[in-house]
Image (cartoon, rainbow, N blue to C red; front, side):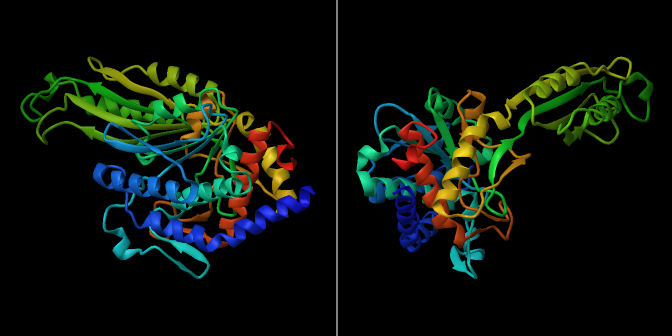
Length: 390
C-alpha cells in the first residue's frame, strides 16, 4: 500500500507539471527586485492571488521596512514551516532580455531557480495533500514567503524567527545543488567593517605631522587576511575598502569590509575575538571593529534527521538516490537552524546560473520535487520517520 500511495503522489505531481510550470512563469513575470518596494508589493499580490487560487488560502501580507512578506497558515500552531522568498536580484526590465519560457528542457527567466520555481513547487506540493485530505491535511503548516532575502533579510529575520520558534521542522525552498542535491550544511556568516583612524596633514608640505590611516588599514588587512583558513572551512575575505578624501592629504580615515564564512559557530566566535584583537601597527593610529556574527551556520546536525527521511521517501517514490551537499552560501534556513529547529535546505528546484545571465531550472525536476516536498510535509505532520506511510 505504501508504494502504491507514493506512486500516486508522484503521478499526481507529474499530471500537474504543466500547471506548475505555468504558475512559475506567472510569478517570474511579476518582476521583484528586492530594493524596489513597489515591485516587491506587486509580486506579493501575485503570490497571494496564486495561494488563493490553488489552495483557497487567505494569506496575510506583512509590510516591514517597506518590504512585503506573505504568510499563510493552516491551523493555529506552526508545526512545519515552509520558507521561501519572492524577491530577486534582477532589475526591472530584465524580462525583455531574458523572457520567462521553457526551452530545451529548462525554465529560464529572472528568478527561475532562485527561487520562484521553488515557490510553485511548494504551492503545488501543498495542493497535492489538500487534494487528498482537504485543509485538514495541512493543519500545522505555515508558509512564509519573504520579500527581502536577497538583501540579507533585514526586515524579515525577526518574522522568520518568530514564526519558526517551536516548529518541528523547517523546509527551505531554495534551489538544490546543480544535480538536485539537498543542502544539508550552510556556512554561517559574519560581517565586519574595520575602520582605521589617523590624523590628516598636507601630503606635500608636512606629511610627518599626519598619521596615515591608509597605511594602518593596510597592516590590518594583512592581519585579517592571515586569518583565512586558520580553521577548516573558515574563509576570511577583506572586500570593499575606502581610504582618504583627497589626493594631497594624509588620510585620517580608512575602512574595509570583511566577509567571514564558517561551518562552525565556535569558529565564528573565535574569529570574532581574533579580529577584534588586531592591534594598530602605525603609531598614533587606532582601529575600530563594527559588525559581528550575522547568521549562525546550518550545521549537519540540524538537517540530519530530515535528510534521512527525505532520502527514505525519495527511495519509496522511486526517485534517483538523493544526495546532500555542504555549501558556503547562507540562506534564511541559517536563522531557523540557529534557533535549534531542524532545517533542511535546497528542497526547491535545481538547475544553475543563480544571479547570472544563464539562470535556469531543470524542468525534469519540478514534478519529483513537488512529490518529495508533499511526502516530507505529510511525514512531519504525521509525527515521525514513517509518517508518510499512513
